[in-house]
Image (spheres, rainbow, N blue to C red):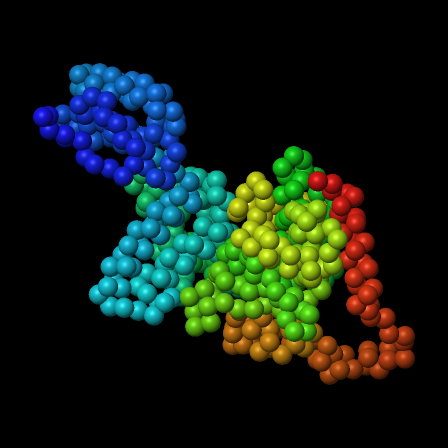
Length: 453
């Protein structure tokens, strides 16, 4: 009876000759090679084929090439990994989750406050911000700075944690030889830009209307880009009207997160993002008619036949029941579309034709900034704004104090002469709920005609 020297595995494994085998790991459909020659470190990498016969042929070729290299005095080297930014972040999260489990065994912590929980949350936000196809060599100074410009102003402690996360990304990429030292971003330069984070501008209603109209009607694209652009319009508009954060909060939103309260108002439950793991794990965001309308545009775009005979709320609730796991702002081409680049392209075009000012610092985060600013100017109580936006009254007071002088309440003190002169003018007629619904239906019809599926 011969001794079985092969190691038992829980996945497909075949020994070809001594020192050479092929195998599959659970997370891949392709076969990989295990190559161990005398005096050399074992090599393991994908053969990039799911066919077993083809995998054996490729493995034997690799064995022949490796033997020839050794005979000519060259050492064997592990092939470079071609990993994306998302894959590197996934590795880091996996490593730190293991460390977290180990630390939690020694000292149990409350959920959300475990050791390394902050770092893991920041890595997940960084991952949600960047396109899933981005390579490490593309993560340059401009891209890193853009991340900081699209988040809420961090404290010095938070800034340090975020820099730690970026440093580890670059170090892991350097370890895998995906980049060289010259590609590592000097994060000290980003710290200097902290003032610019605070100087981001909100869109006025007129500026937002210009952006929305241009993006929906005039921005030129083709192929897959047509669907992507339409989805980006509704993504950006929903941020403007609902105040959610870009990244995890927006991309984590599913149809099942929508519901209707006793007043027949649609609301969404935010389960991912900054509030995740806090004392209030989820938050409910009540949606006005405009925010509700953006969801209906998306529903009509993605599932026209499913909801064609349903009214507004019934359509959204139908998708909540029948498409519960589908992410609202994902497309059939990507679970994490790169809306940021498209948004920046709109801004560039509009600035070139002088429709938007160069002097204003507009970024994707400006949509949330606009929501809070508009709410303050409508004299909505700060406690309600803070609750709906998932922030604190103190943060609003610290960063939006300039808005108070722009509010309707402030006008009776600051422009009393103007109000006195115009008090006899005929006031503008406010639209009724029915008139708003009619306009919304007209826009839905326009979208369907201008952008057929």
